[in-house]
Length: 256
Figure 1 (spheres, rainbow, N blue to C red):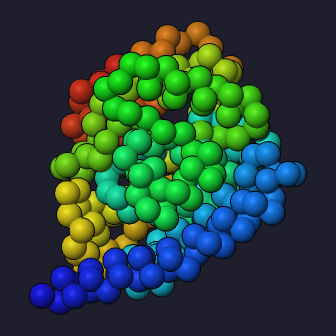
Figure 2: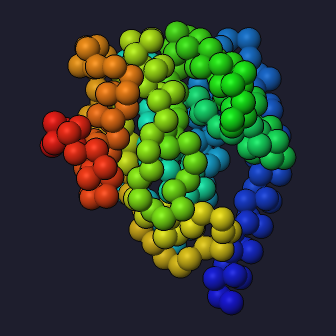
């Protein structure tokens, strides 16, 4: 009962704050539109908006490690493991400029989804080849324009907390555009807010670890599939996911 009450208060706060903050986002978008082509200012405001929910929630103390490893001098392909809806809020704590690739349904959420459109984040309809093609084209244009891309290569949240197989899209992008890859590891969000649930699960520390970026020169000779496996092994090793490492022993051994 206590967790249910806390959850109702939290989601009520999300709704109330969104009602107040979305008009501010519209004003920022309108004022900066003539000179801020990449929506840098609006994205920074969105980072503040999203971070508000972890800053003010004592049940979710977030520790960010390796922030100094973020690529800040060129656009890159940022990839992270995906455990919970909270991953999105936590990744905004990086305060790094990027465009999300997100399922189309998220863009239809009132206020929050509308703000995603203002930021020119990139929608994807799962299982639709035309949508995948359009997403990849927009990602290429975004990287060429100087903005990084943030993707969950697992495609969806893990239901069991273990690392799922990676889809190849992010790594095709990195190969095609010659962009660095920035691996990121999230821990603790699955315990705080499990998949298919909206009830907060008490106090759970959360960590966000930025790993060393992978320069395009380092994977120039790898195929897309090899690169996908390589990055999967790096993230699996960081999370200590033995099952994922055993599923990919050759790449894991090379990485470790």
